[in-house]
Amino acid sequence: MPLTSPGEDGSGIQLPWSFDTTSIWHTILKGAFGLNALLGLGLIFKLLSRRWLDAAGLCVAEAMVAGFTVIFVRHQEGSRGTLFRDRVTVEPNAVLGIPLPGPRGSYPLHQFRGVEVEFRSGRPSTDANAAGPHELVWLMGRPGTPNIVLARTRDGAGRALGHEVAAVLALPVSEVT
Image 1 (tube, one colour):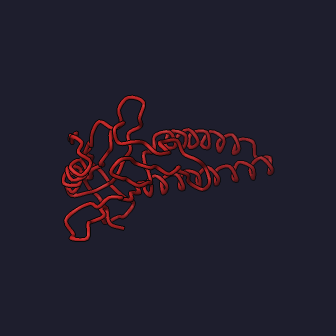
Image 2: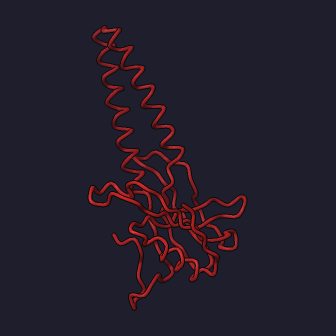
Image 3: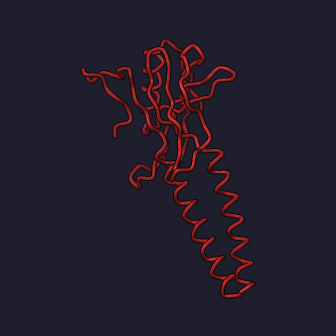
């Protein structure tokens, strides 16, 4: 799936524009939930076989993994929705039927103060060929309105996309490292 939705002339975004930045977090959370399930099953097996010391060790490991899973759930930042000229609509985010925190619903554009391009180091995706610096393009909410991540890009493409989104929506753009 392309990171941007080019217009018919190939020159830029065309509204309405659909975005989906959930795949990275869905992959991470599925792995965390899977590890929790595996440790939970191991714990049950050890308890049923009355191997108390092994069960205690698995209980400690499961508690640590569950703690990290809770942190991942609370801090995931993916969004899926559609950007219109006058509003942004964000669909509820869930993985394996578990609802995740984050923005959902429809927000008028006047509730946003601008577009922000955040430059990050590290992997922008789960694709092994995509390692390296990447960018997040955010729609930044005014107080009381959530920030919404519109795109994940790499190789500096976020700068151009951020400026393009800001121009289309008539919002200011900023960059942070």
